[in-house]
Image (tube, rainbow, N blue to C red; front, top):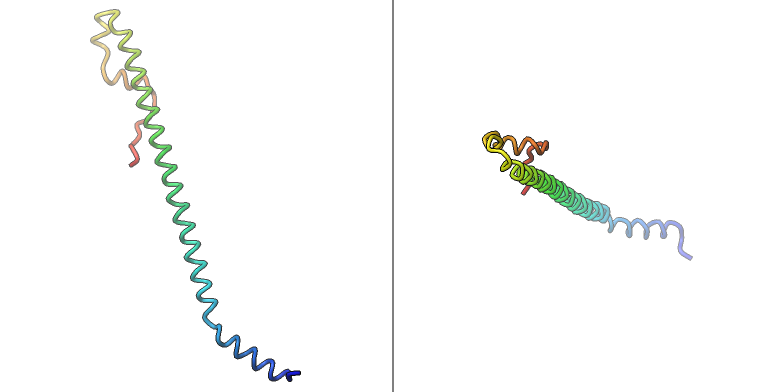
Length: 102
């Protein structure tokens, strides 16, 4: 059997050769977490853009439907043609204006 002193000396030599492994493991973990965070950021920003574009689509659809409704009503009287304007069409769809996300 080996003496306890010899065993401790062998263990110290083995551990002494592995001083930088913690640094490498920490850097690898940091790189992996950075990639996960960047992926989550880009996925969430894409979802926000999709939601914004859907709201713009809904706003445009409602304005178009209001214009179509006014176009059906307008020919019934000549006076109503003078009163119908772009502001009237847009005010029938009571949605706030939104910017298009690109």
